[in-house]
Length: 178
Image 1: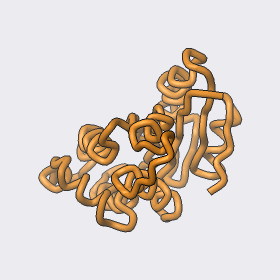
Image 2 (image 1 turned 180 degrees about the vertical axis):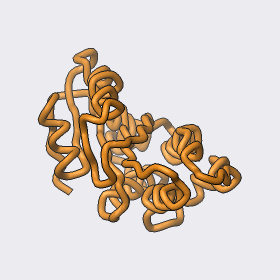
Image 3 (image 1 turned 60 degrees about the horizontal axis):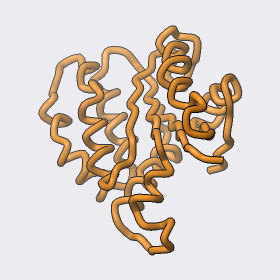
Image 4 (image 1 turned 120 degrees about the vertical axis):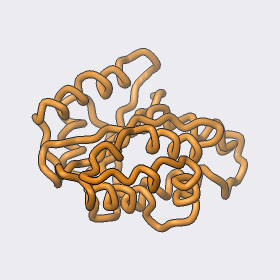
């Protein structure tokens, strides 16, 4: 997937067109504020349409030293289950089940999105914002030249599979640095 770095309106256009965008800049330059304030306001205000109209659910996650567990925790805490017509929260309330899916399924994020959409009264688009993607490199040991086959691979693979899928999943990466 070609990830193009966008600023402001170009970032929004990239998300619309390619379902993926990266925002990069120095620490303190306003990347996270843009996403958490400006982009979120535009999404919640219905100014941006996606594959499933202009209703959005936004999940912000930050890679940690355990990226799969963190992503599973953030997805579980996101409130996606509140969209069910007939809540069946037991299927999605367990972070451990989501973490297992991320490690073992081909398209765990797309599958989660599809299962929620099947029970949802209102169609929606899902935007997952990865704030601090560079932390994945730092925590995994890649910056020290170590080869990894662990959770960092499952983490990245989950996003790539979601973007290849047909579900209305969009991904924004926030990266600190030049």
